Image (cartoon, rainbow, N blue to C red; front, side):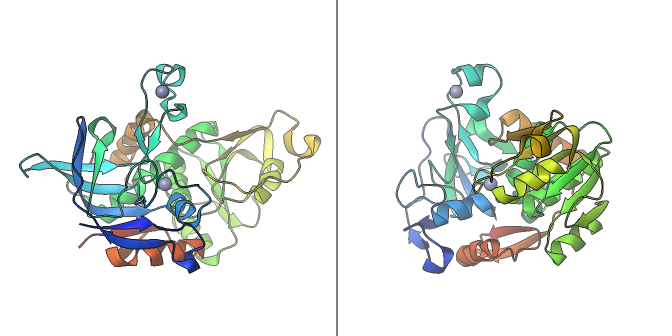
Length: 325
Ligand SMILES: [Zn+2]
Ligand SMILES: [Zn+2]
């Protein structure tokens, strides 16, 4: 089979990925073999390619928003599934036992600890894949598996009150899905982005504003842009008692904060770390009843590095998805 592998992590201009030929992987006990239909391209894949997240093993295949079909032993079809970022947890540590498996110190991740979905096949633990509907195009499902699920966890973590005012900083793949989930739940959403294309999309999807700064104090906010420089302004835009959740796995340094301007009046700054399987199931249930508009841009298998380059240049309007033909 063909697979993309991170050869030498570095800027996309240095071509850190290459296509390799490999045997189709053999599932271990408890795992399934999945034939990839499509795989979403996430900012985390870019961090892995560029080395912002250090590689955990050589020549790993990234990709963790896989829509595919289970290939049963003997070759029969085992149905459509999604393979997401959380690949496994230990099931017995204090975090796993208190329903916080996203914090498990022994958790492993698709496309980082094991080969992911920028390939024709991958294996995944059966207990961590999600059943997916047969009647929805793969390009609409793939972005839900990380951009959607992790954004949904960020929405839970920012403690938005019912009908509250939510700030969304940055408007890439995850933000555009999360804004729609928030609107479906009755929120007033203010999007902060400088990109004219992203502003236009935000307003089309129902945002109340898309400007340089929110026009009213916010009950909660989610920072999707991986820029710590935005944290002070986002905290300052919060109303009393508001919470800012940082959705990304990677953030540049946060400048120093002023207690009065940025934190006093019980404002809260918190991170979001991956997701639990329960978050994944809850989000995939929500989208069955409230299907979001998914703006995706299709790339051929051979063009994964182009998709990552476009992502690094902020040139993808919506979510990038690689399709295996
Ligand atoms: Zn654990
Ligand atoms: Zn992701």
